[in-house]
Length: 132
Image 1 (tube, one colour):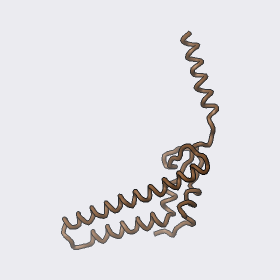
Image 2 (tube, helix red, strand yellow):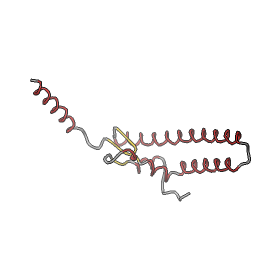
Image 3 (cartoon, helix red, strand yellow):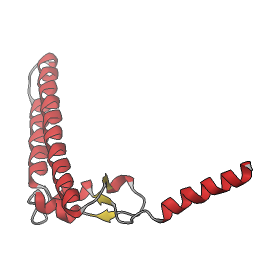
Image 4 (cartoon, one colour):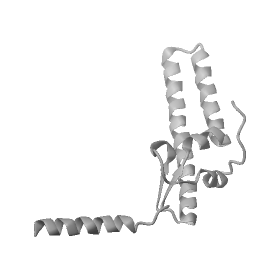
């Protein structure tokens, strides 16, 4: 009796998996977005320039530390802004194309539909930016 019940339960679970709609998972290549997105590249260049200027300055160690903390805080704010933009764009594309889940390409071995190009359109990334 237990064996029959276990087999029926396993068959029920497997049949549910067989009827699952394919193509409900989308992926976004964050590396590609950040390599081509002028907004991200400008933020990256600003932070690098500010950090270099602080390192080269003749300010005291305490002043440098305070200035670097301010740059770190700006980095966090910029990172949050960029993340919100990407999430909103991915959510918009997912809703339009009826995806149930969007994950980053970097954490997926294979599978899923790549919607990076559509996210780039929403973010207005039109062409590959020149190398910094």
